[in-house]
Amino acid sequence: MLKTYMWLTFCVTAWGSNFVFGKILVNDFSPAVLTSLRLLFIVLFLIIFILPTQGLRKISIRDWAWIFLLGVVGVFINQLTFFKGLVTADSTSSALILATAPILTGFLAAAFLKETFTSRMLFGSVVAIIGIYFVVTKGGATLYFEPGLLWIVGTMVSFAILIIITRMLSQRVSPVITTFYSNVTGFIVSLPFVFVMDDPVELSEDWQGWGLLIVTAIVVHGIATLIWNQNIRYADASKASILSNLEPFIAMIMGVILLQKPITTPEIIGSLFIVGGVMFATYQRRKRSRQVLRE
Image (cartoon, rainbow, N blue to C red; front, side, top):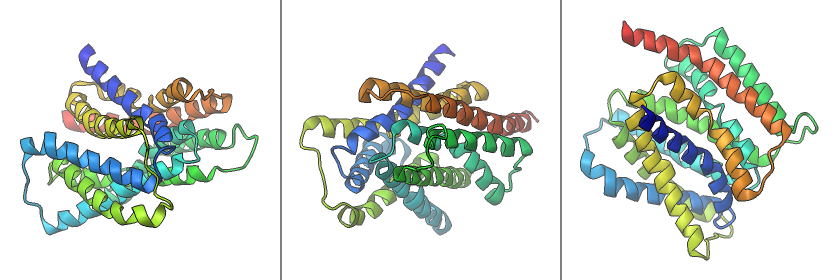
């Protein structure tokens, strides 16, 4: 079990660090080309290391439509808004806003998957929103809303949609196949936007920038996801959830180490409200799902 939680901690560290690495990358690459290149390296990783063990499966026309939507919204828009937001948005604030994705997922699941949305989830949502207010207004000192954070809200919404569509498809299509085709779709769709949105197109002029791009694409979106999916089955659901909610704190620590960005009091207060609200809102749903499995 110790080994399992060590691997899960590695995954959470990789995902939390992604906000800081993304902030570094947008200094060397323009957002649309960065999106396209990251998706390219993710697809290459899947083709070389994953697809040979899975093979291609026949997919119905209906599922193709969902995979296309997943590729456009859950992959392309998710990645593009992430990098567009990080051009001006703070990495820690971005991580905290994205941490509320499970709550929006609960709303969407209630609307489209007919799952129950409880008063506990509503209360947790209110607590998390209070935390977001603390973060974006710097403790109420200013009502100015950083435009980059609007892009990050788009990242959060598209991520919640990704989760819902993936859950719908998981009953009929292998998650690995879904991941592969959706990333291929996202990459193809991203190509025209490189020339439409980036003016001018900016590429890193040194190998460090390219190395960071390739490594983060493969590790964060490839290896870490595979390790998480492999080890989550052996972990207690509540403990694994606590680990996943540590991403904003990882982003804070990595911001201090790599960006020399100090942690502010509003960020600490906001993070406690956000993470606490998310955990409070989602705990009951996990508990009920475990009871159903036992029955």
